[in-house]
Image (cartoon, rainbow, N blue to C red; front, side):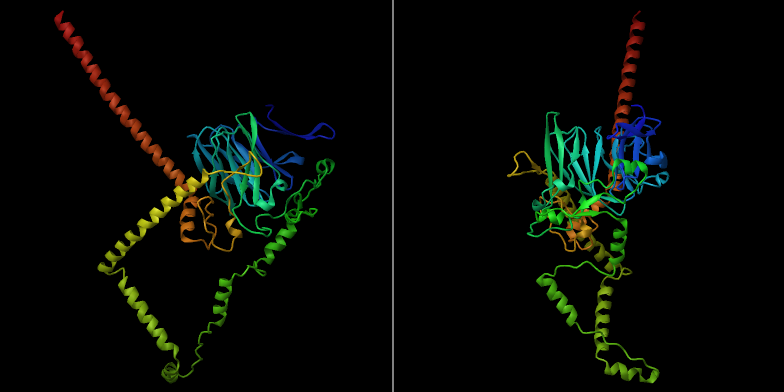
Length: 475
């Protein structure tokens, strides 16, 4: 309430740093290395501070509405996510470049819905998933963050609204049950309910793609070291494999140099895939495929006919060309008949695609509302299951009714998954268009009602005037 953010040294009991703001601060979030702090205040400004130098690094306008906004730093990236409201009370998500806030949000705001409850953002850096818990409702939405874009995964729904929500430390998840996130929410301000997010996999081995190294309980710096200006790249990490093997966790210091080396080595050392029997057969067929015939260099033009007669590949190429010409001729857009046929075929193809879109969306909505009671832990709710991030997956995913549709970043998904995911990818634009359309229809209905009321008012006034004139005539 005093428009400040204060950093306390709890060992000495003194507020060492005071960051002054022009209005009340509603949310803040530290960067991954603890050097910077992002804040958002009632003045609708988003700021990034160099905390120990008490200096604003970047500042820009956030959401339009003066309602409370929230901010979260997206892991080790220099990106921020904010939640707020538009002027029309639409709940929005914004993605920002932390050190270029003056340029505005990246790619426009994502419209979630229209409600009065504040969206509380929480980010899981291990799986690049942003969770949004609605204050005052029972919904928890989650999105994958990739290449400065958000892709809708699914939604956990409950009839019990939450007023508070928090994520447990990553080291508390159950690795053997493929639990990727554990959270707690308040229920009617009477009790705290645990929520478990499970990745729907069946495997007897350690899942290293969904369990990378995560922050441990060991501090990377002491309070004195941090206040003195010492920097680190990130927190002390621990190896999840040791947790899976029930051995002593191995601690690793986070380093940006190691990340850069891994990115440089990625093109030279591609990711090794586990070959299934079918993959081995395909590979064998590819290896046994004969190499194409290379035509020899011909200096004398008179010898071209002789070389073509001797080459057996030429007739095959001619046959392919003839067959392609026949196919292309049947679909020649310059022909009116072929154009009509093509339009009819397009109408026939378009109908099942639209049907599949509707079925997929309805299936996803129904899956988002399903919850699962844990047999081993009474009272623990398993949220709608989350699949692995598509950029880490090398095989197409079969989506069941209880799973979340994988995001459209995967390049080798099945056609059904890709069709459903395209709806998620265009979430911001499509929802904005839908919202504008609904607003236009609503305004038209209001105008129609006002016009009708105006006509009725005129009729009543006319009747009243006639009555007055009648009384005057009697007098």
